[in-house]
Image 1 (spheres, rainbow, N blue to C red):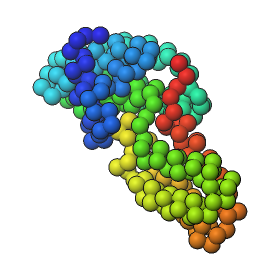
Image 2: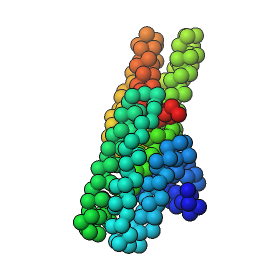
Image 3: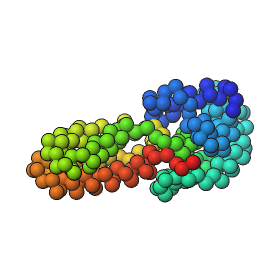
Image 4: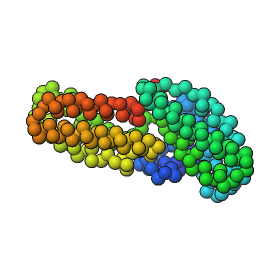
Length: 250
């Protein structure tokens, strides 16, 4: 790894989409972290990406951007041959989807470079960069505080309040849950998952709906409905965590 690469990685914390990752401020970018986690295929690609994205693109060095095309195409090969293992097939499928999108951007970029289309490669660079980072991030754990906070409350309800029929705890946790789900919006989505925004917002609706049922059941002191709603909500959250947040098996 080149010494200057770590400095360049720091600039990747905010992509062209505008999604920021304040929790990892000051840490290295996903491509570097993925390489450190054993996915060295990303390191070779990132050397060229860093130079093209941070130097050639802002300076509109079209010759350098065109020259990067065949290098990107060559270094894509090892990434496409990767067979990482994950705890869930959904997470693996998510990685495959992002890798395919990334590959399509590489192919489009390489074709434009071969044609000598300087404006095309310039326009494609932000998308190529984003999909590269999103693909690398799919190999790593994601910090998602809005979801993690809700999981904590649901687990407390399941482990403590329901078994003990702790009415005050059930009512209080329902109120806490209702407050926490109000934070489920576009701004809560980590930038690494910006490409999955539509699907994630749909799950947010399911979570809010589940929390609403819990609140109504608490108001009615209907603990059977309450328990069923918590079980359903827990299943939604478990699936979400396994697909978008949990780490792969190394």
